[in-house]
Image (tube, rainbow, N blue to C red; front, side):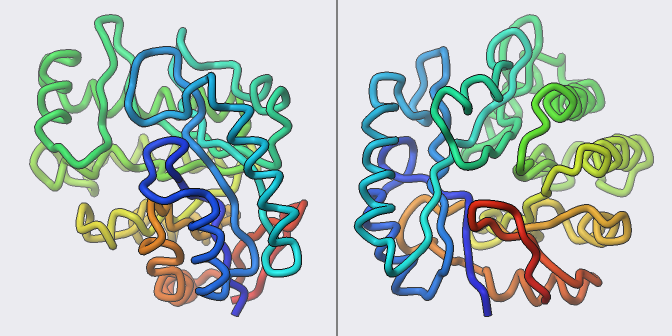
Length: 277
């Protein structure tokens, strides 16, 4: 079985293990391909992103590890970019500047004129507080802003991979809306159609499950099945933040994709290719 992961974080951003520790664990767990994808530098004070002053060190370390372990594993250098209107938009230009192998683009913070709604992390109260503060508690307005921002990101950036595109539901947990409500499914379908049009690879992210923050993958199973039916390219991401999470639920996710009707998954070895399931 071909095993890989292109979404990972280390001590250069909000991860807990070094790049080399992650590489060594990937080798131990039999991965053939592994990508570094630090959270790209962010133009506001934060605790999660790669600092601008450490970008070159990150790139140099990744290059050194590629050479050091070249006979044991194929390594690639990327970043996970946040897209935020008026703040983080020039993703392709930054990726070219850093000479990255591929890029992941995501929405973790939803733009409003009054501030940014943080929809990720372990603290559910921040989700609730942000919804109230920036969207007046109107979940429809907040979720619609999330998907509008996601669609704008796809249109303007055309990333190689779109990350956890329905992450907005993580802290919802059925409290504000149900994911089968028509207004929500309409938003999802609009985004899926755009993913297909752009030829963007949709990651199936295992992190929510193994961290206990979700009872399904991101995207959830109904949308995995829809993506398969639409012939949208899929890859598996463990979104690992420490060595214990390298490869977490990869095998289970691969089998799940097969059950959802997928015939192949995408992997990267310098260019994107397919592996039959």
